[in-house]
Amino acid sequence: MAGTLASLAATSTLSYGLSRKRLKGRRMLLLLILLTTLFNPGIIPGYLVVKELGMINSINALIIPVLTNGWYVLLMKGFFDSIPASLEEAARIDGCNDIAVWSRVILPLSLPSLAAFGLFYAVGYWNTFFNAVLFINNHDKWPLQILLQNLLIDSSTAMGVSGLADQGLQNIPPETKKMAAVVISTVPILLVYPFLQKHFAKGAMVGSVKE
Image 1 (tube, rainbow, N blue to C red):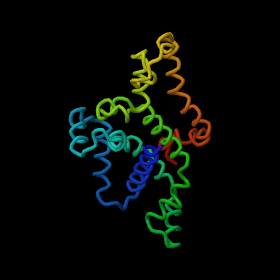
Image 2 (spheres, rainbow, N blue to C red):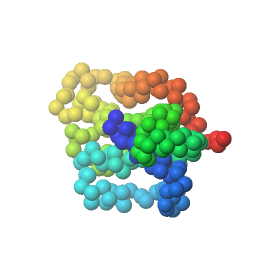
Image 3 (tube, rainbow, N blue to C red):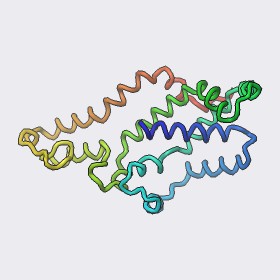
């Protein structure tokens, strides 16, 4: 939840700033963001950066490296570009600064895009696996997906945690445990989707059509 909110805050603020043509260095920033969607630095550089920042075995290692997504930033920027400039001008006449315009005018009009990208980010954090394997060595901080994998691999433990061996668990067929893992990993997201459906349908097309 914290990661999703942080990602939405970072993505929306960056997208809003890039949508304002008065921003200095705007073209260079857009080019740099575009490059992140075309090229991947690789595993080793990413690991070294996280290590030098002291985030190994920290939950921050699962959030900060993927805090925002260049493609999502560009799409949300397209949505902000479609908001009439007259609304911002009216807010400024009323005495609003950039932060007030963003929080009181832009965000309330951006519920469809926030719902869509919020769902994307939530699914991404919920399915975190590779970064956890790479950065988290403390078993107590493992996310659900690694615990489910351990459940499937080690039939003598419950949820991949040692010390909970049970003869009854050992007799459970592998197919049953696999189906249980699928249910556990998908049901929470399925429960969230109905509350976001009305916004998600609009937000899925964010930035694709220019008026």
